[in-house]
Image (cartoon, rainbow, N blue to C red; front, side, top):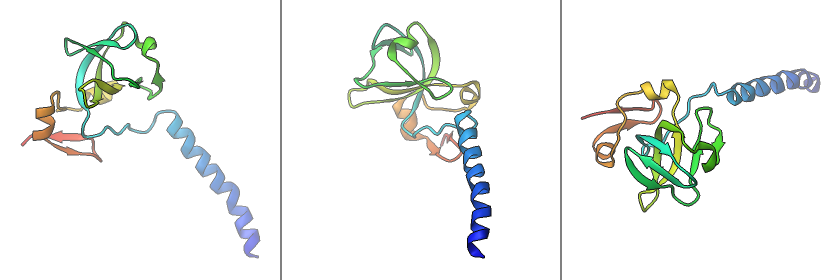
Length: 133
């Protein structure tokens, strides 16, 4: 008897899992940024060259760029694009991970633009919000 009940529930559980995975693949989930992510305006140049907040920078070796749909871009794919981004840096302060923001992500204010602001403010990871002291 128990096997019959399990065999009837198994297709329903599989359908539920497939639906959850499909919803996630359509970008319906909110991206979670680390507390070390800063906000800036980036203009992507050729190869690993870029301008961040008006200053020329070189992307870190192994840098990853994510588009608004959270797909990984090659550095050449972003050539010439200007975008509001969240980014983390490596030990040499080179951008290591860059997320091109959606409109909803850009509206989240305030977001630190400097390391000093990030150290002085408080970050709530679950709500993805910053509060100033």
